Amino acid sequence: MIAHVKGEIAEKFASSVIVDVNGVGYEVSISALDYDALKVGEIVKLYTHHSVRENGEDLYGFSSLAAKKLFELLISVNGIGPKAGMAILSLAAPEDVRNAIANADVAFIAKAAGVGKKSAERVIVDLRDKVGLPSHVGATEIFVPSSTKKLEKDDALDALIALGFSLKEATEALEKVDKSLSVEERIREALKKR
Image (cartoon, rainbow, N blue to C red; front, top):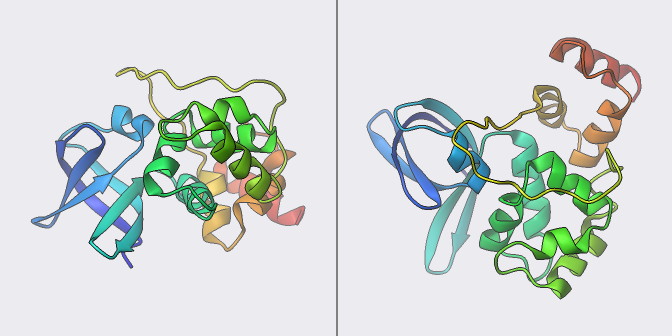
């Protein structure tokens, strides 16, 4: 399995990028948010999900480990494949998608390309208990692409996931930790509350 790729963005296509890793180009499918944030010539590290099928292999890339884990939860739902999972993650930032699932916001999830109301309901039913508590209550806003908007990444959440926490456990551990603290302090506080 390919866990991540680190290299220069050599080319961008409609929903993927080619990452040049020491002369080898990996085509990696990405969400609309990551596509908007990444620039040709930029050195990046993308966490990847390596999908092997009967007729091919695909790499799906994410700028954060939390986004990758959420994607893997999404594709574990019956009827949600990698393309539908990427479409759901393209709706908003990973934390907003997680929050929409936790809030049972079927209308939000159903707005993803290729995901109908029944599939959105299945996502909510299957994942609501796996994504943690909602960080805020209310409707979730759809992502609007903008070349000036930079994707927010929670390094503390990624670190906890790397330490073996599930997405739900990491989210709940960080829920009551002050966001103004440094990443290291947030991780330390989350570990104390476990």
